[in-house]
Length: 90
Picture 1 (cartoon, one colour):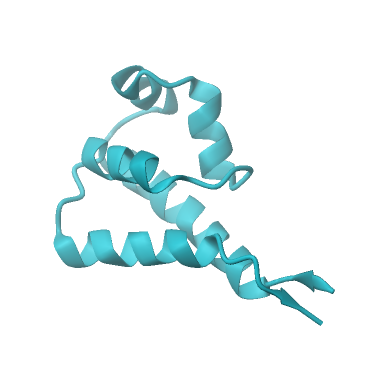
Picture 2 (cartoon, rainbow, N blue to C red):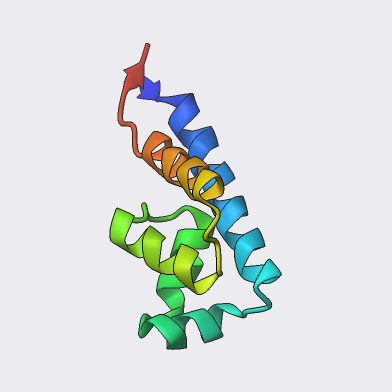
């Protein structure tokens, strides 16, 4: 059995969306870490898809990046939820 490919694709998409949002906000990983009082390595791990992102952390990132459009927020949250699906396929 292998991990759900849809979850893997969603996680990669989420990584790209978050990295692009940070870039669009004109922020470096270090700056985001300082704003949120997180380690820079946490930002790196999230953007590389090495760790999942909690709903609380996702809200903090979206807020920091200035993403307030409700439809866009909902799309990103849905993507994050899809990336956490642990369904296994045969």
